[in-house]
Image (cartoon, rainbow, N blue to C red; front, side, top):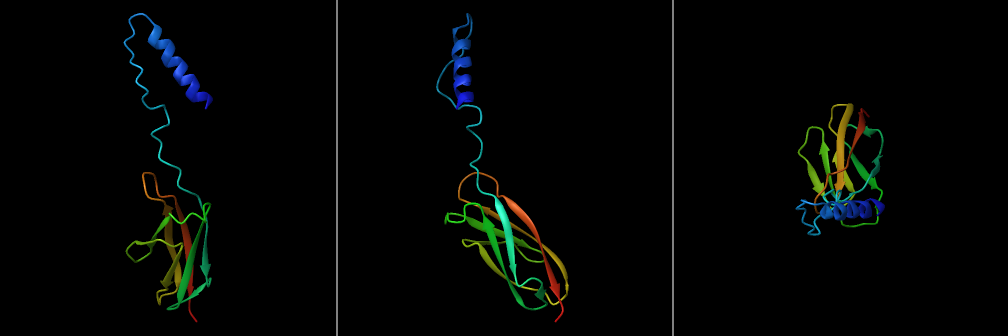
Length: 127
């Protein structure tokens, strides 16, 4: 709040200078065009962990605003197309080939701003 007051005071002083044609129209303040803070992804829970090859795992994305139902989630699963959902859970069928698989989850509300993201690794093992 103090920075906005200082900004307006400086503008008013500049407008009073001789020869200054500064028009005070109530435009935006510095920082007003910043995208809305979306959220922070705290963790991605994997159940079961590790996952048996060919079985299904559930990924649960834990965000700071977990009670806000306006969030959408987008997952980039290694070897698949991106998946967007309105819930924080996604079921994933593990490939038959064991190994470590890297995935990315993103979360955000509608509107401008970045999609905060988190990389997570899933270990797929043989039975």
